[in-house]
Length: 249
Ligand SMILES: Nc1ncnc2c1ncn2[C@@H]1O[C@H](COP(=O)(O)OP(=O)(O)O)[C@@H](O)[C@H]1O
Ligand SMILES: [Mg+2]
Image (tube, rainbow, N blue to C red; front, side, top):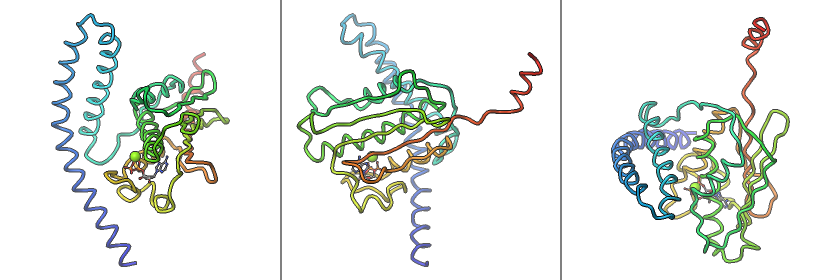
């Protein structure tokens, strides 16, 4: 019990120190991103078709990064702001995740999407995007660590479906699976990483963001490789506002 307490305190002080560091990094990072935005603005005036194709994506990514820094700064160092939920389409979101991973054509990983046509989810776009990027990037890293070389074997599959009032998104890979060691503390900050250079924050962040939506993320047992299942329930219907509507109608 004493050891547990000591370890908890250690983690808390580490989090506090990290919080301060994050605020400082955040502050200056925002300035750098704003400069990068000015440069890419200039770039987008070039007629080269490749530049024309990528400049808007670069701009959008930078905008998103700036907004992210801004929201972290304004909300406080170590906590996520509450989700701003809207109805959004899952298919295009997954396409954005794919782009953000920057899987170039020479990486022999097959990316398979199987999402119900027109599937929508009620979620904070940027937060769900971060959840999926974190989970999908782990999958890429797991495949790369094993030496991905054959798209018939090295695959990442994203499925999306609705089950009643809940949307289920699954990210599966055909890598080595999550080791016993990583499994125990996978969703705890700083505890779960088995990668050299890994911070062990990705899944902790994903877990926090998904839970803020009232959903959950877990490892599906007994699959080949690793499958993470993310559930996002619809927002609760506000009965009072519904009643109001009916009275007004
Ligand atoms: N798809 C996966 N396949 C195998 N192991 C995984 C997978 N996703 C996560 N893990 C394990 O969980 C650990 C924690 O992941 P994460 O929280 O993202 O931290 P990091 O990526 O910084 O190590 C990883 O170090 C890895 O051991
Ligand atoms: Mg990670």
